[in-house]
Image (cartoon, rainbow, N blue to C red; front, side):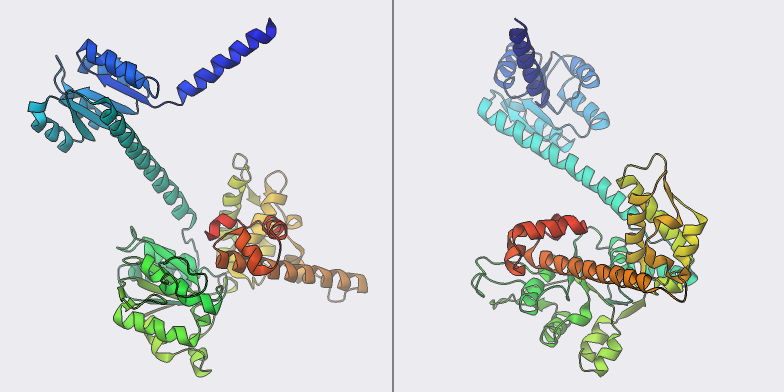
Length: 483
């Protein structure tokens, strides 16, 4: 008896869940026969609400979550146009399909001009109506997803804001704002981890190209034999493994911005081809003969001094001057120590939220701030972010203290003379740190080349899938970010 009751309850719960997952369609029509026919034919797939007039439809809109409105144009009191206008004022996300007689199509066209998604003519063909409803609902979902993506983008951009108290960086920030208003190519130099990509994104998102793609490529992370294809694309059959045509980064970045990171690693042969693209704004895919035009703005970055690379015959001077229309140099973090506490607190807030500590917040003790400011930061802002991320996860009671920070930051306070045991421990720690850095760099390079495909990464690296997955887990790297 108990089992029977439980089965009945489970069945009822399942039906309720299935019903709640349906989209709600509000049908407004003053003809009872039409309402019944539509209810009978739509209720298996949708939750159907019925209104006998425009006024009743407006009342139901206020008391229910409605995903689509199907309304007759001619109804007593408030007609379909009145309901449409109400929806446009208060529920713009709800698509409206208007129903009209054959002789009143002009009214339906006017309704579409006023915001209706589409119209259907009486007598209604149910198969045609169902297709139209699905099309309208999919359109509404896309609009909703687009709004969500824009909100996420705003949050992302807020997290990528450049914050500084350093006069040199503040002057650079003003320069970035000015540069954004131009179409000139930009060359950014600075040590690894100083924020060259962040500066490039800042320029793009404040330019007239902000609604168009920002495409990035690390010229040092892709094998030389694959780099040309990545930059310019390839035609089907251009080389072994080219089973389909592929667009390159320049083609994808058309009317937007292409960010060429580590441009100093670009092989000489490709430097010539890049110079041709800059001068002629066109290129051919690998294995192709047709020219493809591009209007991509180029922002290049490097941790090398390209002027020195030119003297060593490693970089073309003509390409250098084509890229260096506007030149920016980002100072290392050790030269702007006043930014260290600001950035540290920003990263603490960021990772505190990820680690569900936003209610209590993450504080930095004075001792921790002093240690952070006395460290030379060879890895610059990127290293600071990694250190704070680690410290947040180790923090107790929402507080980062000097004891929470890793040992390398405490080296300034280490005794001048160390025992053999201390020296051995220090050597082991440094060795482990170097190995982790090499592993992480190797893994990222393999994932970039494989496009985040773990099977392909396994084939390229010679590791099996489990080893790749273990490395991904060990270093906290997401393969999805490389797709």
